[in-house]
Length: 177
Ligand code: ZN
Image (cartoon, rainbow, N blue to C red; front, side, top):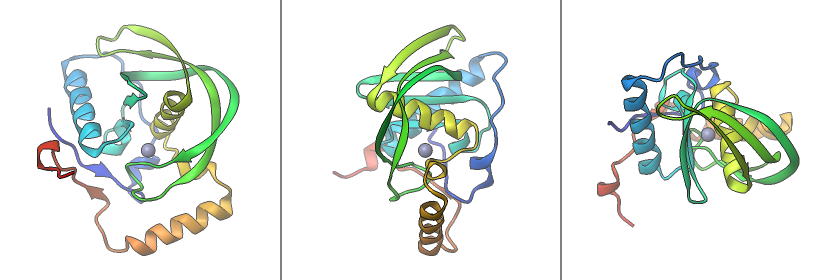
C-alpha cells in the first residue's frame, strides 16, 4: 500500500477515458488498497483511478457507512432527480450544486473480480455517479451551466496559477484536528 498523489484540475489524466480491467489480479488489489488509503487520508467519500493518474476503471467509495470498491462499474438503472452540493478531491475548495439521478442500480466487480449489483440512493448514489464520471473523464463542474462552469474554472485557475498539477496527501498520523 502507498499514499498516492492526487491529480488536480488541469492535469490531462482527469480528462482521459479509463480502460476496462480485463482480469482483477494481485496488482489490481494492491492498487485498490492504495486507493482506499489515499481516499481515507484525504478524507474523501470516493476516489477514482484517474485522480491518482491511473487510467483503469476502478474507484472506491466510503459514504454513509458503506465502503466498497467498484471495478468496471456500470449504472444499469437510474431514477428520479436530486440536487445537492458536491466537491472533488481534484478541485479543492470548489463546491457547487449538481443534479444527478436520485436512485441507481450499479453493476460492478469486487476486489476478487466477482460481479455484484447494488441499489443505492442519497449520498452513496451521488458518490457512485461522481466516481464513474471520473472514469469517463468527466468532472462535476461539467454538470453546471457553461457560464457558471467558466466562471468557477477561471477563478480556480487564477487562485492556483503556477501551482503543481498534483498534490500529495498527508498520512492520517501526521494530521492535527
Ligand atoms: Zn471527484
